[in-house]
Length: 142
Ligand SMILES: [Zn+2]
Ligand SMILES: [Zn+2]
Image 1: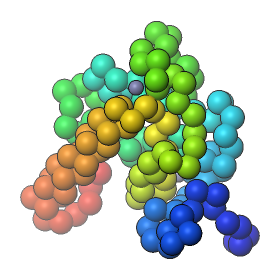
Image 2: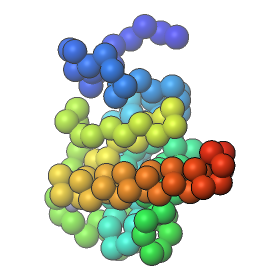
Image 3: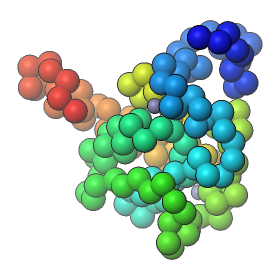
Image 4: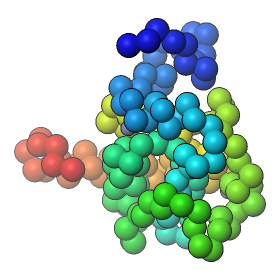
């Protein structure tokens, strides 16, 4: 492992937010060009996100647990575009929330509004997932 500094690390941020075990996630996050952006389609939302395929899949599955329709991930610019102008212009920067997903990392490059909306879904999706797995005898079957 190269001993490089993560550009988004807080000086005191020695905790859980800057650790990415997944090399694929790391390289997507390191690459700040537009081609590494994917789009999470959920309900009426189109959220620009960055992560590797596997962890995006995981993230969208968890987000989709609490919604009526299934979440989808596009690896190209959606045909209808991004409805929210603030999301469209949102750029990757170190203030974006990074979500730890099963050893990987998902960066949400959306406007603050939509960031919090998707994070809420993710949180309640995680809860639902935990309840589901608990009722199945504690096995992680996702
Ligand atoms: Zn990953
Ligand atoms: Zn937005």
